[in-house]
Length: 406
Image (tube, rainbow, N blue to C red; front, side):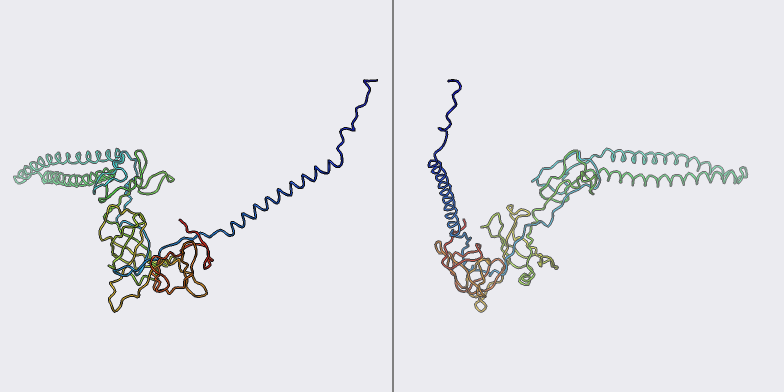
């Protein structure tokens, strides 16, 4: 029957030769893809391994005329007078009358604290003193009457009318009133002292500038609690403002103890601020702190500016050069050039530097002179203006191509 015909499944088969060709094509495509990836990786590795190393260079400096440089050091501008102004008592800030960067004179009111309690204590002390002082007037009136009575009793006793007891009582009454007056006067003095104490408590609620300077930090706001000691789990301020006397700015540097013998009091110094690298500031050594830091092996040196300038700000970074005296003809230092100390390399005991000519390195053996820390004197092997490598790979080769870091 037509409805019972079976479907012919033979047409769904794939010929063996066609099936083989399809599998081979896939394998070939995979092999080509792997080879392409390996080729790309190999090319990248070759380019990376043969890339010119990057180096940092610096120019060789000619020796400068004038006093020779004995030592270089770095430090910071620090003011001699810097104060974090705090209150003498614990209280709530009710007024702040300054802003950061504001110049204030000595005694300027920076802030006020809540003085309501102190004012009440002052009023109480004044009232007690006034009450004691008023009692003295009453005692003086009573004493005047007692003296009149004593004079009368004395006269009557002389006439034989009054008894000795009456005279003694009259004398005692007068003397008692005198003692009460003396005691009341002492109480008045004590009241005056309590008034002064209360006035001082009120004055302690006013925070004033201790010296003329510039406010560099605002540490409290209205409504905050302040205290001379840390309290309240760190939620209580311990300062109101930080004031700096700009006229007391100086330089503080740490000098390696191996070179401290080169530093003398009143020695001439040239300072260069990191913010103004082209500005050379004349200075002098103010003092050498007579102690060393055993951990850093340094000695602290303070340097004073010959002339202050508004551009000199606290905590600025600065580099200083300690200068020697002018060299005479007999003791003239040998000629040479100066390079950063990081440019000097040691190869089997020989000192060498690498110059950059175009985009290639040149290895030069050098003869060294004195070193002042950051810079080293080269007596032979270099000329002013040469570009020397100061930072780069640890192993460099003569003639190697390099790229300069910009």
